[in-house]
Image (tube, rainbow, N blue to C red; front, side):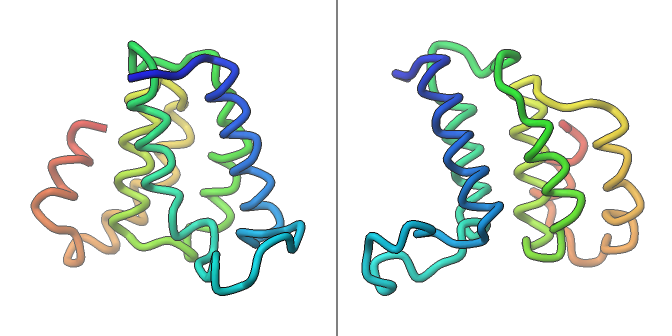
Length: 126
């Protein structure tokens, strides 16, 4: 439960850089086998970690507008389950807006048969 506002903001800024460049090692300072996955493959776990960091899940200080825009433009790079979970964690940290969440309603309805019981439960809590 350790973490500070500055740490959360720095970590979010770094993830945005990685997502923007679509590369887990944009500076090419590591061997490719060290980071073979695309950064979005770890986005769900990353946002979960941000939500768990610090004494409270609320992170109103965190600017996630860029991330939400990225999600809308790049949802096809993520699994359906990851989209559900990322949106759930954004709600937990109080970093969302209603219009953003409404963008995904039609998408979730169109893919209802692929949702698991826990996905549906997360959606109802989002």
